[in-house]
Image 1 (cartoon, rainbow, N blue to C red):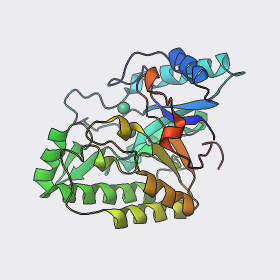
Image 2: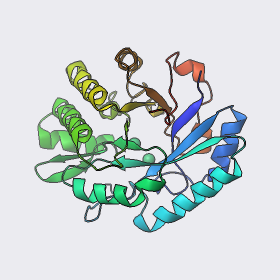
Image 3: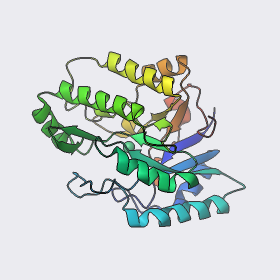
Amino acid sequence: MLKYDGHVHSPFCPHGTKDTLNSYCEKALEIGLTGLTFTEHAPLPEGFVDPAPNQDSAMSKDQLYSYIEHVQSIQEKYKNELTIGLGLEVDYIEGFEEETTSLLNEVGPVLTDSILSVHFLKHNDIIYCMDHSPEMFLEIATSTGSVDAVHQLYYQTLLQSIEADLGAYKPNRMGHITLANKFQKKVPTTQSFEREIQKVLQAMKAHGYSLDYNVAGIRKPLCKESYPPILTARLAVSMGIPLVFGSDAHQAKELPLAWNEYTDLPLSNPFVK
Ligand SMILES: [Zn+2]
Ligand SMILES: [Zn+2]
């Protein structure tokens, strides 16, 4: 089994921990990973106001080059022991495609592999942070009319993100594609979204994108399953969509310990296109 973790945060994340890049790499060696990609939350697009109460969803723009330099120096330090990818977790935000493209055009050339994620949903001209808290999730449900409608909106936005033209450096890996389930034990849906998820997978397949098989949801007490769940991941595999494991660690101890617990799925290296 390929023990590569393609979704790791860093001390540059304002809602994460101060665990150093070094400590992630030491942990990775200790648990026998072949490598990992740092995918810090990319700076939010210019002109966008972070709706999270502490405005801490992403790294600020003035930290971006420091992040890049730090990852590059750690790549050098561990070059004989670990493969280290330099990436970003880029937000798709409806209406900010141009700003996002210009950021990607600016830094894309130095990145090895990145993730495109949807955390923000737009409804009635207001942008919400969907995964911040059950309270904010319910606020969106009040605005859209129901919890189911939030899920509809999420999958619709995800499809838009897959179809969006974000230029030559658009990430080719889709982040945690069932993130709408994050608070499912507290705010359940009344229906299945299997059909919507299948459409998402078909669109990913058509564009040649890979899937972030993200186990963060297993750690979340209100979710308790991977993004996407294992059956969906198997479906993706049967469609020929590469799966790249993602711990979504925001601290070194969240790097995956027991791989077998998660999956017997074929996992891919993010550098194989
Ligand atoms: Zn984060
Ligand atoms: Zn994310």
